[in-house]
Image (cartoon, rainbow, N blue to C red; front, side, top):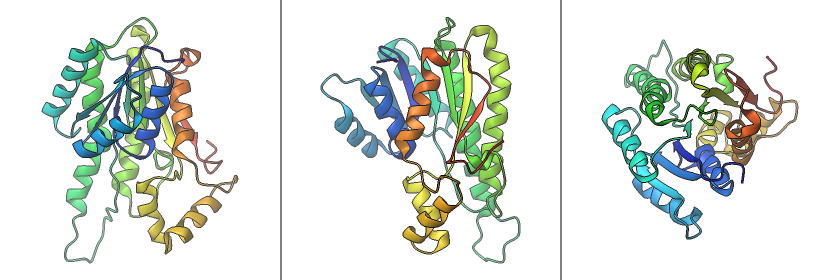
Length: 258
């Protein structure tokens, strides 16, 4: 129960890594606000996780809409008075080739959507959360980046740019917020068994072929489970990590060794 009583906001909390983090934080005793664009998914997740104590509360929010972000944090503070931990997990991916011969190419629109979700959305949430965060050493900001924040992949320029940007944002804010004793860190997952990853597996053929190919990219020869990322997030949110800040921590089975 390392996070007993802490108030946590997790964007993209309805599925995949975000859902796993929500479950882990709930198990650690936190009061957890999960946010995403799908109200139906959030309601289902809250009903499945809550064990009668209503410490998981769903809030619909599109992080690309600044007004909705403002409402989200206003509602959380109305319920629980403060925000101790913010997990920026909302993410969008897709191919955005610089040169395309497809007549229906929508790379420019997708570029804007990816940057708005992955980078600007995180920035908006941080700005709304900060006035409500403690300055006693308990404040935590966790930004979910990616190993693609460490290297590039052809055709995925928007996603790579956004995830590199998340790491830059993390480092700058870690310095800016150090006087307030708020730590800021990024988590950089490799291949994790999520719906988004399974969509990516199709690039290699079938999902099974993609999973096998992804596993072979890492020395440990495996695709991670979302719960492993949740465990890292729980550590970074805990008292044990009170002196860890400005870091971009990779969890990928050894694929990237910076």
